[in-house]
Amino acid sequence: MPNVAFHGSHDRFARVLRKALGALVGIGLVFTSAQTVSAQAGFTVDGVLDAVVQVISKVPAEARTARSLGTNRDGSGVIIDSNGLVLTIGYAILEAESTEIVLSNGEKVSARAVAYDHASGFGLLRANKKLTVKPVELGSSDKLSVRDPILMVSHGGRKAALPGLVVSRRPFAGTWEYMLENAIYTAPPHPAFGGAALFSAKGKLVGIGSLIVGDAVEPGHATPGNMFIPIDQLKPILGDLLEKGRAAGPHRPWLGLYPQEILGRIFVSRIANGGPAQTAGVKQGDLVVGIGGTPVTSLIEYYRRIWKLGNAGVSVPLDILQGAKVRSISVKSSDRYKWLKLEHSY
Image 1 (tube, rainbow, N blue to C red):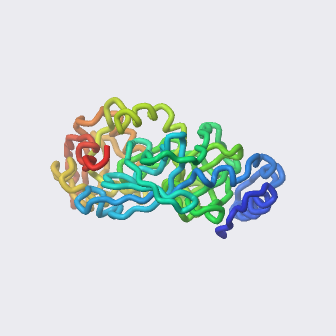
Image 2 (image 1 turned 45 degrees about the vertical axis):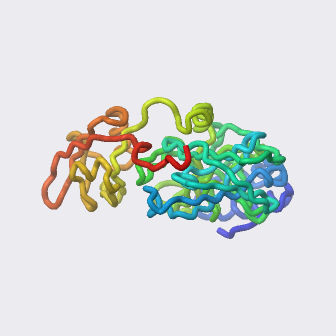
């Protein structure tokens, strides 16, 4: 799928969207006509470009995430209120000691990290000076359906805006003990996905970019695209994030075990140094065959069963294949926020 820039007019949006539709039809998807879809596009990209900013952060070398995510991070974010509040992807600012944003006119503005929420994946930072940029409006991601036209925008102006379609709504499970029940999958893929803004055909913010994926349409079928976090995940926790830096209430159990699903098997691809799983004796290369005697064959099933046991601190009975022998290993879970080094930020 070519990376075609969107230049702000409805006609241009329609032409590019028609090409995207044609390519997606070629892989077996059935859509309404291009004319019907493009007619739903009721805004121009010029109205939202200024609100999408570059997010730059510096992370100490001793941070827990420095090795996996790097110490110099660069992504996008979008201004969502009149006081310079920027919504981004959480990994862009996680454990950062300094952050700044770059406006569409090239101006650099220092900022401070406000919040990180692991359950959703969102991060918040706030500019340290008054901004004159008009914030975007939050839409409803729950109303997004397959075949709906969308616009993906990263920092970089018009050339960084790409039209596309919602191609599926389904759960997403990641190896970092993370799962969304109703993630938004889009195509064609936007290469600068981290923190990119997802706009509905009405020009409202409906998601934040997280990943590029190879199976956007459905698992097991090669279709490049992106996974976006639904904006409705933010609304119930926004007050807590602004007040406390994270969502209120008990957190999910964290094991420090990075599982990878391969052909219906759950492999331990990595272990967090000093985490609960390592302390309990789980090793990289082990195979998780069950939880409390009940087999598990997918990451989605694995997370749902663990999180159903209780909150952070609960003991998780894992059935682990080590070598040729299955061992029952009880892992006393912890709170991920206590393991991360967040003293520099929130």
